Image (cartoon, rainbow, N blue to C red; front, side, top):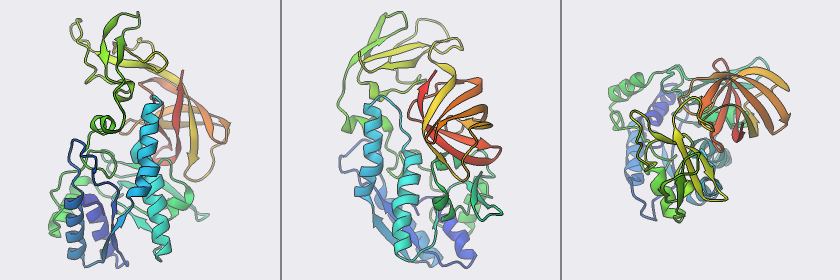
Length: 352
């Protein structure tokens, strides 16, 4: 229970099913570094505890700060310093909610972890489990579950998978839950409303360098390549002298510490691509054939695009998108699908 409306209603629905439920708040971060932004962990705990009290279920706060730093924060910082753009939410699900927390729950006698994710599970004839997209496509969060493995999915519960967001808030309001009108968090996984840029600036020193175009012309200065991601338009800091066109990031050159920008056009080198290699390949259930025609979501909220999947080895594959994709980004998660069924995912390593 994060202190938000989604996990609150997830607990409510399980309680209504007559299941033995206990609320748990994962205390991952308390903003000891005084990073800019709101990290409202005290209020979140109060809200989660109030919901648990209203539902008449036990509630506990579990301190996972050390594990979160080791498994998520270090992964995040190492990735940005290496010039890639990590996905802390997907890693938090695999390593924390359905990793550390699940292990603790099992050792305490619990059999499953329920969350407020908008996703569904479906059991197969052989007893295995599949993850399906949530019914509310505008809120579907199956993308963030792409790195989960079968034993984690078997122990997962997603009570909100059949509901739309408006229905969730209506249920919370009808039950008098204090989180009914609470705004959804938009920050880093379980850190609150902390912006990534502010978070990085607190841990990674500035490393200024030139901003150039493809022709090598110097256009300005950046504060550090780790503060930018491919395809980024806002905050680049280089004004355009061309009407109705803005500069976007198309390359980060670590060796020379150069940030390369260009106009956002279909023919811009480095901005649109169809071919890539993904690593850290993980499947939710069955391993894919060596060659398969499936679909992929290169980022959250992206539409699934048809691809040709060709395995390189057990942990990597080459993908060919049917249509050019904008700003495929090393370090980000590529989620694999067959219709509504999540097949697994990997991490973008090379873009061609």
